[in-house]
Image (cartoon, rainbow, N blue to C red; front, side):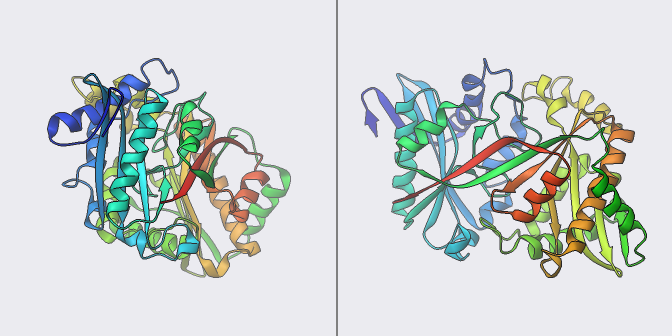
Length: 385
């Protein structure tokens, strides 16, 4: 596909894959807020030999070049598990995705999006949701608020121009994913403190740390709560056992027992909250590589991490308790216990919760009750093919 001197071609071979990964360094070389990802981690997502997502998904990557120089990249992909979901939940039959969109100019971006659409159309897709890279569980949405400050671990960062370019390609916003930030050195408002204290007097409630020596068992408990709690949410796609095992191995080095809590009601696990120290603060100076000295720095940090920011990527309460006072009480108790330990044991001063769907009334209300405010918005767009 050519447009003036612009050439769009599918990624083929190791050199193209390397160009696809390395291109981000060209796009963000002058952006102080960008955090260079570890290149091995990026390859771990985009290679079908490394990412279990490909057991139920298919993808094609494209590069834009002008006179041999890379000017953009994109992925086109679809997920068979997403296709099997009800359409009213966001995905559903005929829904494909684009992701990993980066471009130096509008012409490259529009041509790449068109190439992704053609690929999806040729595979029977009738609608596109994007950007999603590659899974809703990885980096969903285009950053449309908050590009002036660095993303936390496992969150994306994009140039402000992309929003206009995506809209010019015929896409309309369909969902906002919000992140909330708060000062965790401050006690929560008196009402929240009273709710926590009331829960502490309730013998039916137990808030416990995870046991890392039983990692697989704890992961299974969290997954069961997650699938039940999030099952009706917009954009939900089930996570396979292989993906849980894969993500578990990746996350295990930054899993700390006092930062992940499981709430039990009369002995039954009914809620969980996962908090991760912001690894981005440590990897940013590594510029994408663990060599020659990055490994040593990272391993030293992992022994006893000290961070400014803690991120809460996942939190859930089983469906039967949702919209109840008990659900919010358990949430506030887990948040408070983790807040205390994050400050005391890791030197953290800032928390980030998210992402949270814009129509998730319960979580948005909890975020408001603890005096947090929206610091980033990631928007997902839709287009009929």
